[in-house]
Picture 1: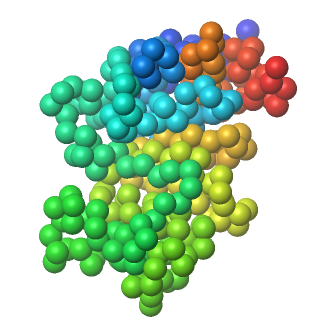
Picture 2: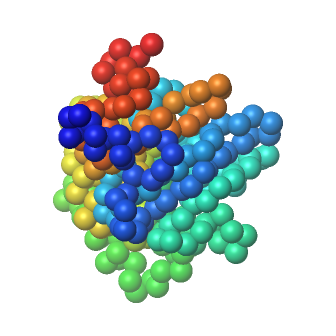
Length: 276
């Protein structure tokens, strides 16, 4: 058997995590299921992400990718009649326990959404408000804001107009500001839900490079429909699919193997652009 295929068989599939044996993951789910009322949206998802790596989640619309992402910082708590079962561990701490505080969790696990969503306030206050809410000392706030805006390559573009409305920025700048807003809280994990879908090609390139560089500081999970983007930036990959009306994982592992030698026939068809 081709060694690449043999290795792929050992790491791919929906039954287990994608970390190598013996390496403690930063983020891990086991047999995760999400139900809205009587409708099961996601079932049996077991994935793991090593520290400082990027997991790209791909798959057709409606197969539970965003539901999975929302469960990782318990945004699912905000949906009535939503039930999450299984296990989600962040740095080996179970977050589905009743004693896990969602607000504290969301500081550790930041989220950037599909469309830029800056507050209708000044550029500076977009970062100052969440910092204040999470107890940041006023004396530290200016330096943290400058650091976060600099981290996303936006400081030179906005340093002379920090009191200008955030909504006056371009779409790409707004998305980078939203990333800076999350980074200001110094998270351990960052979640990205289609962060480039509303951006022009130049801004997509800037945001992709930014996300790739952030792996040095945080562990990242990104949902994307752009397979080329996933190939460019991902260390790990997972293909979500809908089977019997329920979302699940049909292929997972190192990105080079998932994209280069997928074992599941439906995953292989989807990744090759010949989805049936």
